[in-house]
Length: 180
Length: 386
Image 1 (cartoon, chains in turn cyan, green):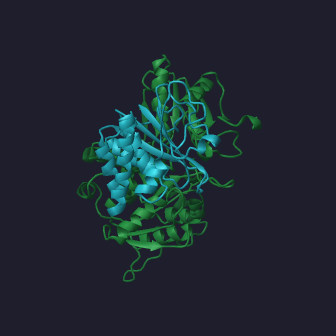
Image 2 (tube, chains in turn green, yellow):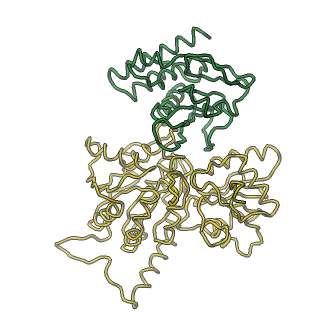
Image 3 (tube, helix red, strand yellow):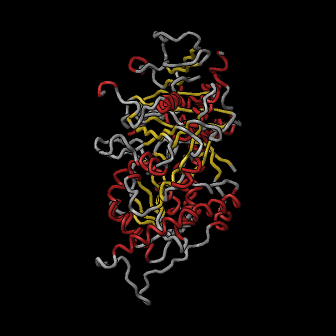
């Protein structure tokens, strides 16, 4: 079983990201489970959402403490929350930032940074980075196929909004794949 | 066919296939997604049902009571304080023997305010005359709705039912669920045939005044119907298996219990985590098993005694607490009663209240505690209160 923990702030779509990654993973051929950990249900407050991937039905219901992957929507969270906590050796951290990560990264964790905010602003016209980061997650981990992700996005959004989100996800997918 | 969906949406779809003629509900976290989805289905003409918008949970269940008395299949859903506000109506629905089915997305009760999961809400209505079944995963949460209607509407039973599934932990979780087709559900669950109904052309009175000469007999009849519901639940579970290939005929279900020395007894979604914890403990040679309780009302005391006959230690996990009973939860107290005189050591652990996360290692710790004779306690409290 592999586990993903998403860190974001209320309003950034972390729960939607977890749900759509789980939907795409199931279409990609594995069992998946996504669930939120709501904090205070307020915009801007730190939130977490979780996804599990497995070749078998998933029975475990506890939160994720030793993730294989983390997705950080907002690098300013790193000041307040220990986003790397419990990460497995060989894990992958995908972080939305335009800068270098200056905090200490656990040994054996691969960090991939990208400026998802700029991509989202350019493609969507909004600083909502969840769908962009899903593309980065697909490229960095191989847990979900890009096509399955695109299906999941068109299942959730309609018309032009779906097209724009798919474009943002693809942009990040190509960026991370190219850099990997 | 398996599809991945949110628990609440899978439940809403199951309810749609049950063809309720009247739905009345008031939104409350974490149940809201179910009734939002149903309202949308009614608005889109995907579901031919009267959706009654009400101003409170008290009115929601009152509307259901009236509609059920008039001969309709009805549905509601709630959580926590919403269920608390229905308290009075719950007793009336059961007393009038109306087969209302209601989903409970289990959530703790305030104060202090908590939106998160435990099972205090439905457990607190244990003496109301409603059947209570608990789901381990979203497949079970979905399937139990079909079974609940079938048993509730059985003319030998005529009792309302809660289908309980843990708030957020199941209601907000996306996972694969096999939601059946309408034709399959129609074959399993025929349309509602009321035993009696309000009809202006043939008037009757329901829920009337009962003098001390008669009141007790009404309570006794509910008790007897609960006893009959034990067999009816098994039968409906077996018939479900024949139709859909998933077996819910047993009111309790053992997991790796055959040669176990220690058994964990639990209710609801925590059973999944317990199963994974048991596999790990078994891997290091420990003889531990699980007894999952599916039906809490009626309470399967004889099946519990039979299933736990060969174990020496029992650890009960309670996501509720009966305050003033020491550190006892409702499940622990009743398991002790069921095993009274058997010589089996039973310890109760209050855990996971107000959304406190329960991990595999907690299950292993509780197993250690039980095997060393320590229990009847709150597990996992913050150190500053100790």
